[in-house]
Image (cartoon, rainbow, N blue to C red; front, side, top):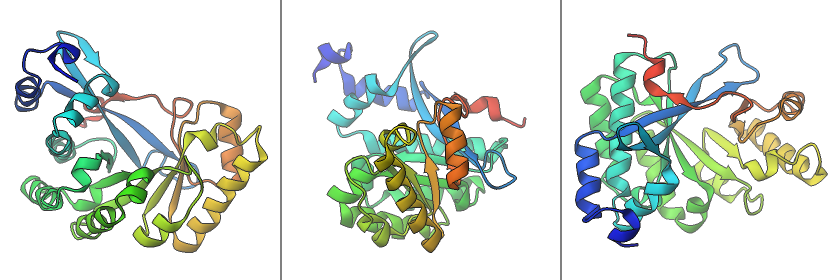
Length: 254
């Protein structure tokens, strides 16, 4: 991955400039509660890159460049700092969830930086949920365990994302004791047509009940699937059939 692929003469300088000048934009996709009275208890933060005037690049076009140059921790810090600043100003949702990159998971200084950002802004740690991809809990178990322990000290919550993408193994759940688990879309999309998909989801729900872990179904795009999730007792749902992504600033109370 070189400058020709990125379209920039010096990708590292370009990325640093983008972070320093806030040339990225935060969107979010709310997560809907299917049981409680609070319709949208939190939203997942999404990132777009303002490459030209009104052109917004999706993550797939710039994440690989950040990853290639080892700059995901800087990007994640920008996301957390910006999300906290929006929370400090006042938004219509009480909490944001932030996806954590593999590189950031292994950055031991990151939890302390999050604590400082929260303290400086006067925002409580419970306003943040950190999403750790299931693959990272399997490939980097010690880093995931260390991060979960440290980030909980500031009051933030832990979510395992993409759960069951490979096979339904509860080892990571037993170790991390996450506050939430997000069931992978490859399972959710098949619950009406594939009995084994529903069986997997039911297994996650049983574990969730035992350890008081919230279960989120992702990639919900059809109302029939949403209705089935409600009937099964799934606590939360996310996807285009629930709520489409919107700019974070659209949630501002000011």
